[in-house]
Length: 212
Image 1 (tube, rainbow, N blue to C red):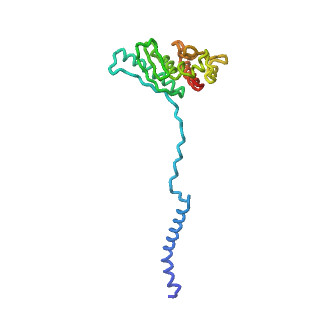
Image 2: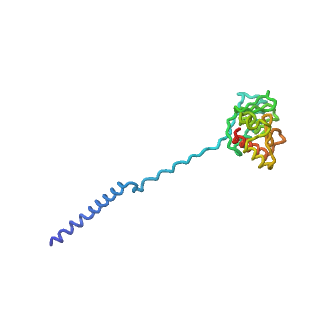
Image 3: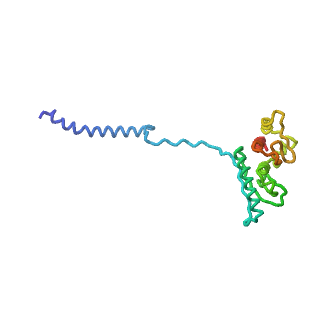
């Protein structure tokens, strides 16, 4: 055989080895270059901060072994408070933690800015009363903001004033007195309707924005 023919098998045997070496070098080069390796999973996008709306929550203090009178009152109060709290949470983003008690010594019902509501008389264990008393726990008639903005016979906060004008026309005003407001204060049973109840909550929320 000629020298040329003798070398041909050697070249054919070496070719696969050289190819493997070249592939290995290329792979090492690719992995060494920053940002080239595409197989690494992409980092998950950072979660965007979300501010949850505040909510009103409530609990009822119950006797360990309630009498029939107490159990009847508890049932009425629970229905009233569930409806009122659901309306506040659906219509506004107000927040409050409320503790409710049945107190037969209370002639009607009352609410305090410390977050307590007491129900006494059965006829006041209604959604209308519960909405009204929740407003007191939020500050209507009970906060320093109420005294400074609404203590002169009319509410002077811009947002609640604008809202009542939107509801009732440009000449409407939001009157205050005795720790209450009207219209839409739900001070009496004959003021209650679904529309009035929703507007009550909207006005209380606007009062809070005004500085209640």
